[in-house]
Length: 118
View 1 (cartoon, rainbow, N blue to C red):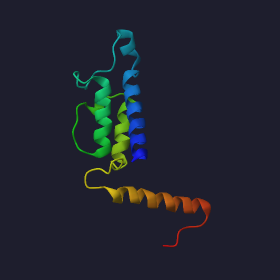
View 2 (view 1 turned 90 degrees about the horizontal axis):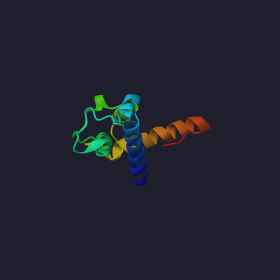
View 3 (view 1 turned 45 degrees about the vertical axis):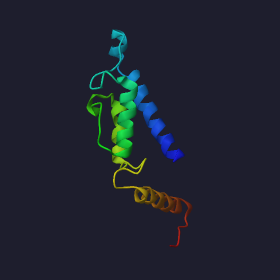
View 4 (view 1 turned 135 degrees about the vertical axis):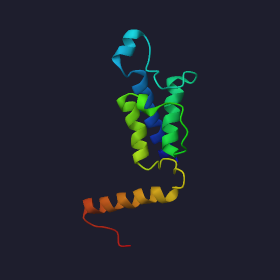
């Protein structure tokens, strides 16, 4: 669970940092990238919600992922492509994490030259 929280925090920091310091023209105007985000929540909470909802696959949104900066949109898309397994996702709990574990053990066996005898 701590590793899952670490990955969630890492993804949140990446999205929030990308959104706060993203496009150069917003710094010239003295603003931040607020397009497609809920104004009452701001960039921080919108970034946290976007990362949390794509990590757990609950389907709720409060910001448009297309309006994020390239890195800010790539991180939630990467979480979706992983199969939304950080917190298990809807309908994919332990078996998703075990599939990645078996894949990692298989690749490690190929690198070492020996593999598990199951």
